[in-house]
Image (cartoon, rainbow, N blue to C red; front, side, top):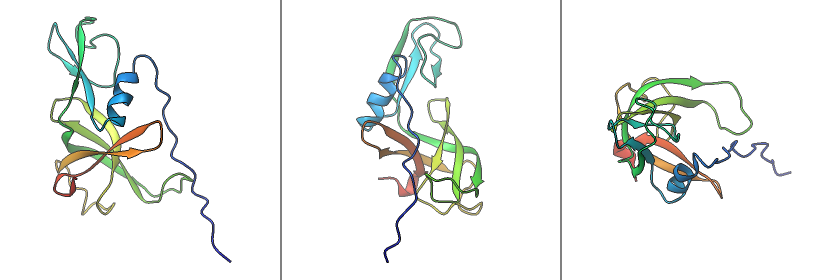
Length: 141
């Protein structure tokens, strides 16, 4: 008898008017951030005003998608939507902001997940939403 998977789909975010540009970008293969036109602060997550100076004069731009591993935890507890173990990581983007994401494309061990390692964004297409994930830069494609 064939074994059936009990793995459920990944929980997906629900875009809002404030975050729609970000999710449109991930679907197009871009990591989009916002920059304040008054003070120059680059920030994430998306919001209608600058968290630094409260200006509403902000713009959306395509980020490089590059960053480094700032911190992580390897989750070993079972989750119906993830093959375990898996890394939950804080990624510092080259543009300055940090993002919480998962690391893919390498072993999920302390030996493979080296702090300050170079990372590159990749996208997991889930139909209407593409989730930004990060992989070691030398494995990026």
